[in-house]
Image 1 (cartoon, rainbow, N blue to C red):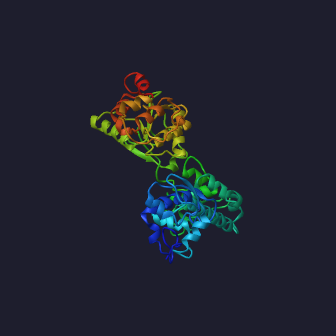
Image 2 (cartoon, rainbow, N blue to C red):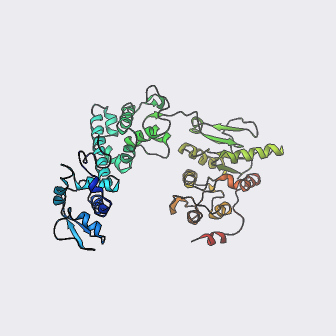
Image 3 (cartoon, rainbow, N blue to C red):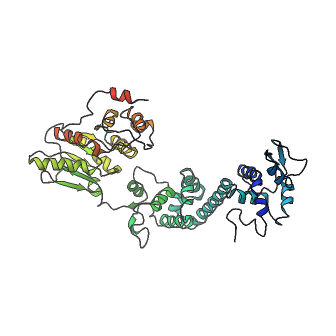
Length: 435
């Protein structure tokens, strides 16, 4: 059985005398050199310079291993690896210095170099699998994952490392390539649920569908759009927008009713205009905001109906476009999301699809009105909130996300009043929060 510390190099060796505590200083110096060089054996190569300890016992213990003149305290001595390897043969016929150092330090040496070598070998295996798997594929599929480009694409996207960190990289890659091989030719379409025989939900979410899209170079705002470009139809009856108080053109919806428009309906959506010119439609990320507004209307038993659309999380490109279409019907649009990395991304997508929309309580002052001092690590860039140049700065300083539920009273007031508001007070709070 291979030794976990030295890979079996200690077989049939008598290590006990060499693991004398008085020799630990020597083996630690050799271990550090092995890590630097990426050489866990240390049987050859340039001499290693060590500093001789002041302890007489430590110098005496090393006298038989470091040849030449007697060791002096504090002296810098060069250890010849070939000579040291030869000296160790009395304790083991094939005992390298690195193996002794590994046992003395109780760890495997040159771990980074070994990991790099293993990663390189595994990467070559992935490349070979990609090259062999493209043979015999239909022409339209080969155009998507030509062996000359697909490996470089995966590597640039970080997918090689991600793939190699999975329990069975070869099996996962093979499964993804089988999915790619079933993609339809141009002009034809296929239901995503039958791309993996016997498992209609295999491509709903997770690593496999992400890898398939990476292999084919299909990167769009959402997975649904990416699949569509490959001729793959996703379920268009689930998901969509949750709505109250706003009606698709020609539809009859009971006053105050809350309903969901699935992607199939959003694809061709037109909206009824507001009853009063310039009314606001409020777009939110979390269902709790819509529920609070609807419950408020029901509790007061009035004819007033809130005008709220909820994306229920990350909005798809189709959902963003449907929000943008509100302005064509005469609605003014106020959009918002959580104050976190995903929420800011949602805002950018919505504002890009609905240029006439305005951010709703999404300023630095709004954030500070609700943000305690936190200890979270927010991964944000200055460009993540183009609608307010101060927002990212104060979010990074406060180090805490703020969710829509934290601002619920103010959001409910805005919906009730019929127009978007902002945090009370002036912008001096933002200035005080700046680093």
